[in-house]
Length: 255
Picture 1 (spheres, one colour):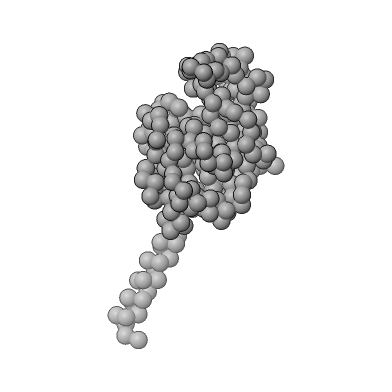
Picture 2: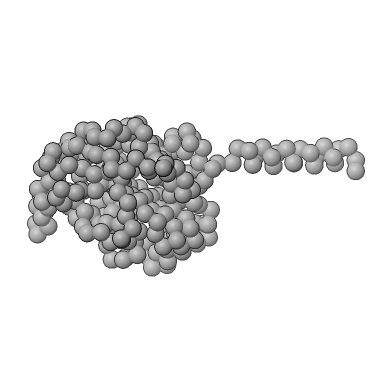
């Protein structure tokens, strides 16, 4: 083999080795289509997730085009993250693609109004775990950590004051939910009425974040993240990354 050809082959090998060495640890598709209420915090969330991807060395693609929720495109990703989605975001074919994605062992992350999405799709309701019912005005309340085993809670004390749009959720739609965070209803006023829709709180136990193994894959949901300023909060960002990391890899749990 001529020297020039040997050098060329060596160069290709080095490029291949370098690409392998710097490859991101996993790939995340951030999806933020809204068919109902549009949260202004979506852009702040995307900016924070882009920075998170750099800090934690994973790749991130942000899309609002539901046509990209197809089997061919989803094959490139390890996690689909629904960021502040609302309403009927996917058609029947796209729904089947997401189902197949989770059934293949991949992960889902839902943020805040991801629970205000796809009410007529039972599989999705079970994937998220609970559905949004109503919320009162934004208030400060006491947030409690329920499960220290789950990753990303290192910056949250056992109990702390937190300001949020506190969602009231309906009944459990999956029996597999493991709860991470809750809010103390005695520290804020949960009562609210929207016409015939009335909220009075969930009682002594009001969950805010949870995770589960579901239909062959993994699902993490957090009800935090309504306000744009939340995405500048280190404790929230690490909480969200813990969910992404676990959904992508199944790792991070402590004993």
